[in-house]
Image (cartoon, rainbow, N blue to C red):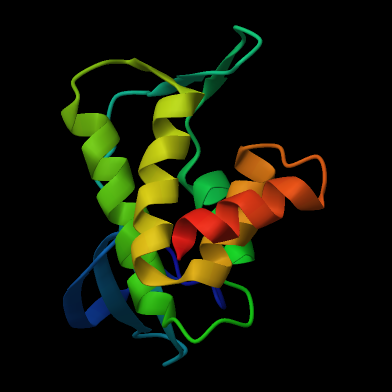
Length: 146
């Protein structure tokens, strides 16, 4: 590991904490005295998503995170709760013990968890996931929420 500022390898760890995405370490360069943060995550076996058209795509936590973040944009739900949800979904997928998972399985896990937290975010996500075509689709989904 090298300092991102001066490239020195003389570093010390000033703080170490568990975080939802792994281990967070606060480091200080002994040469330039600047501080920076690093994250350590366990490298797990590759997980693949089988799309509706049958194609295979590598699971990307960041892509899942972006989709969920978009649904919760400008909603009163903390970033920590959203991150926790993403971690929980990823853990559930990995615990299945399969290397390939259907995208519909991922979608259903996401929809259920979003619905528990916020109805507006749920409608946003569901409109994309269920491919709403018109206002009737929105009305039907909203009616089912009540």
